[in-house]
Length: 267
Image 1: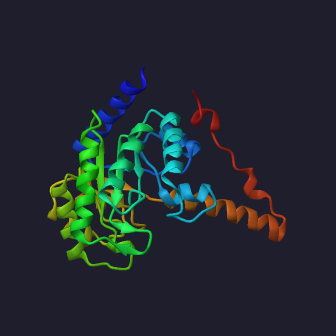
Image 2: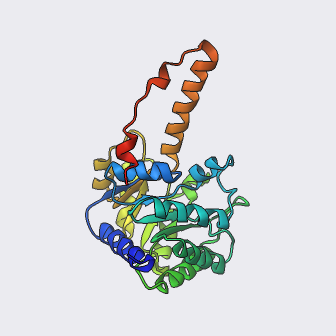
């Protein structure tokens, strides 16, 4: 299958998922974790900016667009699942930056991507400017020749400004600007999630909340549930716990773990 045909097939499958029942889209941090998640039966994948940055020994927000594009290409080749990309703020403050990020992610194989309204310098963009950035990203997505799913993120709740009214107003403006999916990471209660989902008509992505089940999030209106960098940190904690036991007491018992790698990495 040619690369364009393969991408078009993934894009169609991703769009179909959003038109169906609520689903979980987990976040791999490298090609190996992507293949494991595919083998476990998930239907689509999304990158994690914090998890990928960790693989480079950096904190979130300190990765370049060129590095992300290379990462996207590796994950796209790793599985046959649709891939959406965390594109942070588009690696620049202007609408043209957001549009460029969408185009480059798509060129690397992605069939979806998110643009947020938070700048790495520590400020949330003024609402109109943020909407203009989403409009530019949407225009770029519509020009790709396949159904690229654009997610618009309102970052209030994870950036120290949990103003639900403003978050909803932002998501509504992003919907009007052409976003296909809306996302406000950091919503903590079913009431907040329900309030957001009832205020917009586009599918809403919800960041998983420890202590709340998928069924509860779906009942509150979530169409898509992602986990962000959390799976990365689960893996890193297991590594740190095992290494600490080795360092502190010479206990190698954690190394007895056995995994079905032949099944997970087959093909």
